[in-house]
Amino acid sequence: MSQLFEHYIHAGAMTRNADALADLFTDDGIYEAPLVPPGGAFPHRLEGRDAIRAGMAAWYALPVKDPGTVDFGRSRHVLHTTTDPDVFIAEIDAAFTDADTMSLVQIFRVRDGRIAHLRDYFTL
Image 1: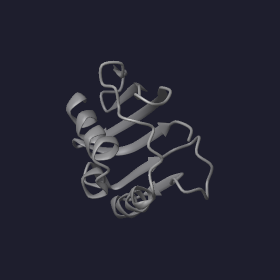
Image 2: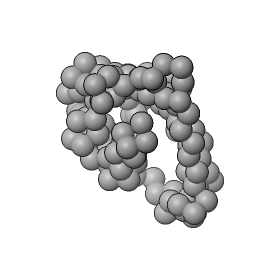
Image 3: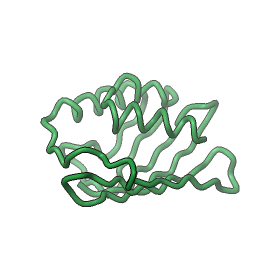
Image 4: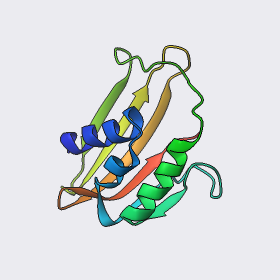
């Protein structure tokens, strides 16, 4: 659980590597951002590893509004297990040096060591 989460954070938020991120998903994996409106720049729902790779590569290619450097000393995350061993929840408070903290919740459903379904609850 924690190793998969750490790989996910490194591939996505830290390095913005769409290939590495997509490789963490099952072939039929689903990435959802339920609070993000459909049709915007950030993908609302991507189905399948190839769609995740393409959708996140398109997002990562956009110019980044730099909120400043992540302040790891003030940033926090908590991983929660559930009664289902294939599901865990991440609560994240990412603190930035030049901006407010961004809080989000992610629900991971795992199959065979890969992400089968991720619901990422945040607002842009």
